[in-house]
Length: 65
Image 1 (cartoon, rainbow, N blue to C red):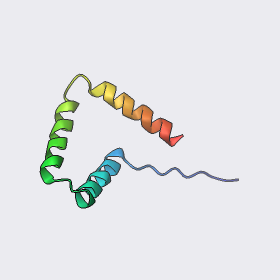
Image 2 (tube, rainbow, N blue to C red):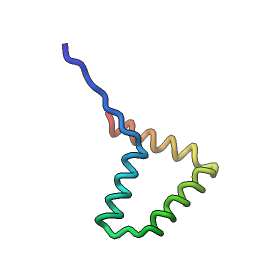
Image 3 (cartoon, one colour):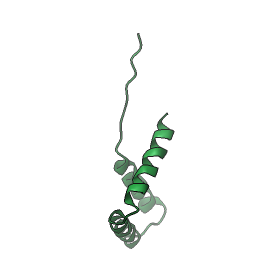
């Protein structure tokens, strides 16, 4: 009988790796990163946050199947 192994990588780790690659190889500046972090922080405090979370969850589920 064959067992499936599920490997789970947190989305924040994937996004962090993408930002690091963009910073290292694509010329992303430190102030760009700061602006993106602030934007995400303030966006999380809006009424749009639950819908964004649901959208991201649906995308991740569809990609993982």
